[in-house]
Image (cartoon, rainbow, N blue to C red):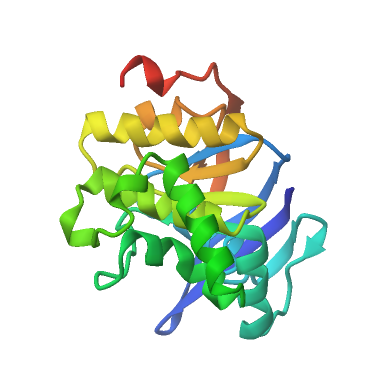
Length: 233
């Protein structure tokens, strides 16, 4: 599903160049559940931005679902993001003046889906995350956990190949974090490929594979015995 070979990325900082990714080799198969861990400055956010087609590497190759991701203009990059990827962010990124239903439906609107179909599909995914009764509520009427569930429903609505979650529990308390991870585990159980960036070891242990980044390189890549979040919920 994801193939990354000899990936390098640098940023110009005044007269100096900061080499952030230093030859990353990294594959994710369809249906895998992988977490990326690393301290601040390790390169994990840069790697996620490249996987999310929000940034481009200087050297190396990135292939997503057998499609080379290289030299894309913003229109094509946007189309690929809509087609292949669903994003979940720490800060939820919901539109405050739109209801939960309208937030979930927004990516489908940009795909040109007819209103009736996108509303039906959006309601289906709100039901899937247990928030059908909150469809008409605004984000400021919801808890952090509910907002993240809306964000997950929005990410899933367009049926992406890969779910990318950047610190999805970072703004949540422990109990709510485990409830969100229980939901993400269920999504992976259904066959969806999931990639999570986290700095929390207990969250990483709820995935099936952990990739540790340090100073722009993969320090360790290991399979783990997944801890089920449901035992804590």
